[in-house]
Image (cartoon, rainbow over all chains, first blue to last red; front, side, top):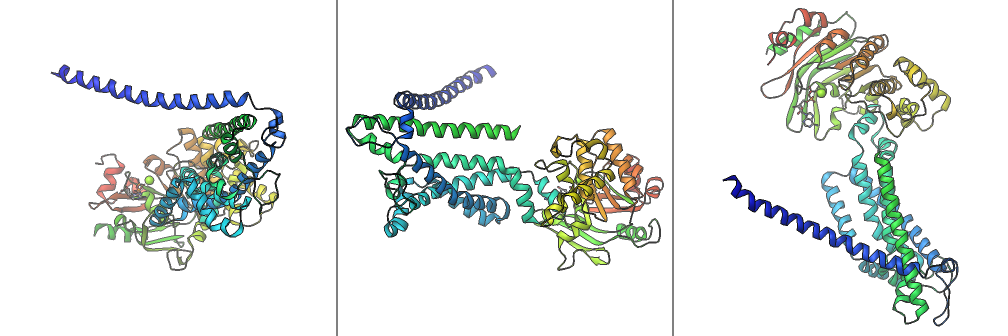
Length: 279
Length: 275
Ligand SMILES: Nc1ncnc2c1ncn2[C@@H]1O[C@H](COP(=O)(O)OP(=O)(O)O)[C@@H](O)[C@H]1O
Ligand SMILES: [Mg+2]
């Protein structure tokens, strides 16, 4: 009697296992193919020259993406300068101070913001900032910060929540005020998680292209100030990849390689940090 | 009915005639609509150890946390009644709970040193985190004094820079006691401070409680009756009533409660015939 029921159940079991394994396998294969292709292709075109020299016009040989690399660094720093304080404050508010109802509303808003397509963020920044002040590094940094804020806010909140309540109680029982216990006990306890969140946010905005089309515009010269258009790696990859110039196309591959390496290294660093933090 | 009469008799049964340091009057504690502690009256004598015993879930921790206004930290928690300390009701409107907690410190069941701070910083945390500026040499002096009082100095004097979490469980608990002492409270509340410790570490904490009564008042919750018998001068016995609210069944000198309990339920509990 039991045997009869067992057989179909076993079959269903193996079937579901197979489906899940297939899904996981496809995901891994896609990642490996994409990374492998970009790395293999990019590696053959990347050189020291690519990193330290400026771009050359179509039809010429050589050249590099020095300005674009510097531009991306500036944009990432700019975006972080806005997003890190705002995101951290939001996360701290969510975990420590918000009443459940207010917190749920803010959390929902942050999740919606995280899900907004980046091109919409670009259009928004264009309407609010660019249409009045023109294309600028600042408008691009602001657009990127909008993308980064929810990432930082949610990871800050999650890691603050992981700080044991017993430590907060210990602080309160010593006659320490609530906000001081947050600053001196809860935030230090959550620091590894918060830094991981910031790094993930940086990885996220470093490769964003769509918002830059509406804000940074691109620039063939070196950095001209925050109020002027600025060049960036993803923008130049986009432009070069669509061009018909062979040298430019190769440079696009090298740029893609560099961008992927940056994101990969940041992700690995975050993993390493959070593993060390837990130990 | 029975309880109220008992409590009235008990409140006159102090160790000596001096003023009690805490006068608990008709205290009830709630979590939302649930009443966890019902109508407790007791006078806690100064510079003595008062033990609160009873089966688990009867509201011992809840009552203890009412004594330094830690109860209200829990969600939707509130307290009814009065607790007089230094002639003032700590629950009167306008009394700052933060100030009360500086006078009435607390040690928890599970040792909870701050893992991000060194041993030294742990001890002086209460001081350092509540003032804008502290002198390093003063903090070091304070730390040494409190670590000595907590009988921990010799074991950690070479490890002051290490993380507080690197010590053994028993050392961590004494570190937490030193940390509570550094705020210079008058009363120290301890919630089952030995339940996470091995027997040797337990003995050390019990010895410490006895020596600390030279300067401090101690209220300790324990589910270990032998411990209450060993360390306390006064014993309070709590029990859950039919509506699940914890009541104070009997309160008196430890000797009286253990050798000559007035309430049948106390006797059953002490002799292990409970349940
Ligand atoms: N934070 C809380 N929220 C709601 N109920 C609680 C909370 N803490 C304790 N209780 C309840 O209050 C009662 C007394 O708990 P407690 O004081 O911890 O008992 P004891 O310390 O004697 O074991 C129990 O029924 C417990 O479930
Ligand atoms: Mg308890």
